[in-house]
Amino acid sequence: MSNDISELREQLSDQWQKVAIDLIRKGIPADMVFESLLTVGLAGHVELHGKDLTAGKLVAIAEQLSEQVRREKEALQKASGATKN
Image (cartoon, rainbow, N blue to C red; front, side):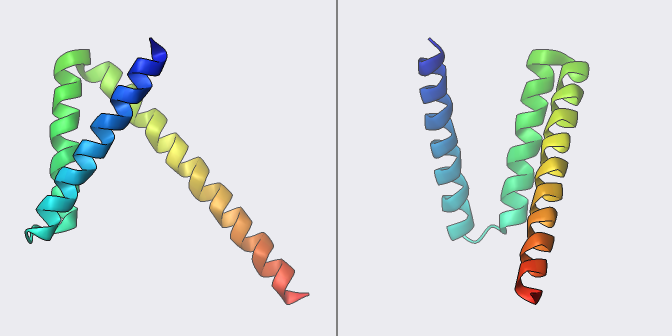
């Protein structure tokens, strides 16, 4: 069953990406497209799961992004140090 869910999530992601690209090609600014997708998605998530769970999900996503930024910065610093030698 989890494989079915993974496949469904991948299909949905692909379809949303196609919609976003189509809208951008039609002249809608990319930032507006993605802000709108995010807003609609969050509103739907709140309707289904409530504000508390949605807020927790957003915090978890923010923490993941912060960790990615930290690792990227660390990798850049290491690469910069390696080129100085």
